[in-house]
Length: 97
Length: 177
Image (cartoon, rainbow over all chains, first blue to last red; front, side, top):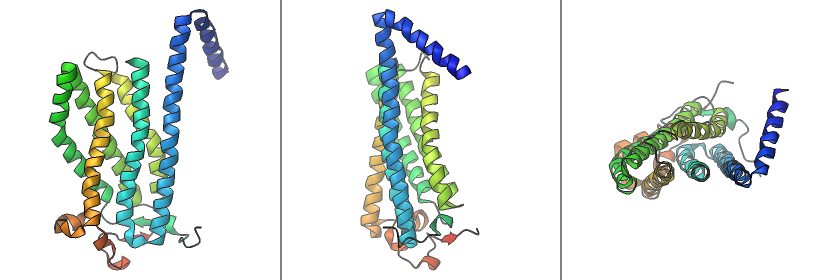
């Protein structure tokens, strides 16, 4: 029930905002920034999953190379995370700066 | 495609020294080295607010690296399956922590969001590229690496080519499950 009430409140606020073009524009910008951040987090999430899956597969095939695999895996994960960080920074700058 | 994969790999664990911890130690050292230059550059562009924001952003990035390495290193000693789960969920959690840390200070008078945001991205990528140069050189030319560090870090492929049971760097073993 609380969730429904929250949705109704948001819809009402959106209706109020629609009456004022400037407010509607600000609302749309905020929503777009949020969507952008969410979408920016999806890609790296998939990428990290692939990196880890392949790393586990590599360690299964060659356990003696685990140290090297983990080293490159960690760097790969950190680089992939940078994409999400860029999305977050874009969100922050669009919404608040 | 995965017919050759040992099905019990997820029950394996790595009790040797953690390469992630070594990488993060190097990154933190380099972050400390680069911090004065980064803060000074921000101070020149955005003033004292930029300098404070830049220092805060760099601290966030280094904490993020340390948490990531701690998660991987700790869970790898338990099992690879846990390591995978901890890293995937840890990604979400760490992203949330970074977002929370920025949101908490965004209205503070000493914060310049542009400086903070740019520091987050530039220091994260810059430190990674700096470390990657070192790691790639170590992997390509293991003989150039100092002996003590080589023994401790688990970076080089030479020590990794030692038969598995005799390898002091990578002592992967099956967990008792």
